[in-house]
Length: 371
Ligand SMILES: [Zn+2]
Image (cartoon, rainbow, N blue to C red; front, side, top):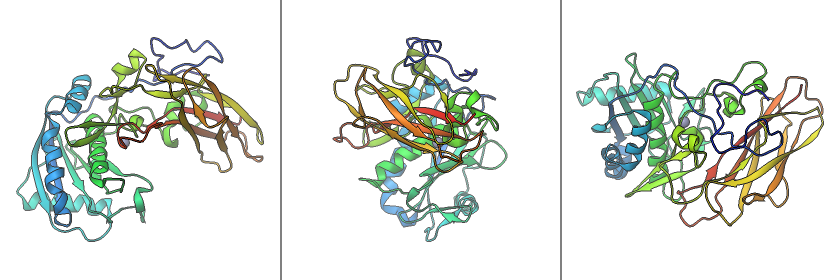
């Protein structure tokens, strides 16, 4: 196991030298060039097609700067104030949109309203109405299969745009504000893809680096990606919780703002394991929670790999509880050549379902590779 500079061991976890022992492997997310959108100017655009949601979505944007959610994260990442400089209504959106269409739509709405012009610290946030998808590389993102939202550079002064697609859920508006909060933080803390993000996956031998660098097989996970699935309710609005280096250093729940409930997760003993073609490997996982938790929770394992045929299943009854040891069985395809690898996400899932958007999933990763 090779530990790179991008990963650091939290203060209260066992040291990485304790082979076979569980340990916290949560990474610190660093900035490379320090670019931020500060102070954040947020311009929110809702189309006439979605006018029924406009008051709710504009209200969300207008309240962000004063929210405890923003203040907690702004304090840690030196973000300063956030202000909703404009809430704009655009013409109806009646068909799926490419990223180019999104760019043109935002630009035309801003032009029609006489601004606000790009100034180097603005985020233009567009909500898409129900049934409208973003077309990526010619393929519509139906049912948010690939993503729920994204942010991207907008112009050459450092500004960003973000698009939120409507993905369903019990109340689609809650999913929309949660997705918007995800993109607002990531646009603000990584507007040029050189700021707060984990490294790109190593092009060769990613198993020589932290497993977190292989997030989604591309690497470059941003601050909200690492807390996808855990939410914060404030007033009438749902926000996504966001990765906190401060909380990682404390060795507890790594997502902020903090919740009054434990963060539970499956811990691993190492980042990567060698596996032979055709072999099934049993990888130990260890139940852990940031504070007392009596109940067990479901654990889900799934595989991301550039090579087909890798599979992963959770052992036992598919659940974990604190201090319990279980396993994930990973099988490599019989014809897997040397150099192939798989990234297995081992997710702790929500044990209770009374408040649907409060705390749904906690991620961890382990990798296998064929030497
Ligand atoms: Zn993201």
